[in-house]
Amino acid sequence: MGEPQLVRASTMADGDRGIVRWRRDHNAELLTVSDDGARVAWSRPSTGAHTPAWVPIESEARLFGGAFELEYVVEEMASGQIGVGFLLAWDIGPDWGFFGYLGSSPTGWAYDLSSGDVVCATRSIKGGLGKSADGHTGVVSLRLDLPTHAIGTATFAVDGRAARPIELSEGAVVIPAACLLRPTQAVRLTARTIAR
Image (cartoon, rainbow, N blue to C red):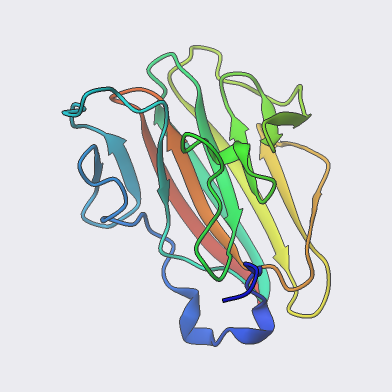
């Protein structure tokens, strides 16, 4: 087997897109996904020797070949950090980086509603966007422009204020995702296709 490769839109079929809903089997020992797959919550106590630093969750969707708008409604932050955003798809599975933090990988981007930062490769690439005033709730929008044979972009926005677009690789395939830091944190994810 060779080096891991990013998945390209040109290698995907329409049926590969999946559905924008949280994966029920991803960290199911700690997380509960609603019946419609739109809401995930850290609802179960850790039973191991230690509590994990972050609990990641990805969606079933693999988005490519079009324009999409996602909305992450953070229903409970439990006065802690929380990351919402996306990962690029690799042929061996997504690269979560260390400790399950969404923004620790160079191919994962997280918006942290507690600080107002977009994070990639463990560093803030854009700060000063909106953040939760009470440390409990907030809404983060993400626009994805993902052409099959050209460079794509991803743009985070909070309260109508957008960050600078993030340039993605040509034909990128995107996986909506989140990472939770504390029990009781909860995120609802919705999406709509703008164009294909």
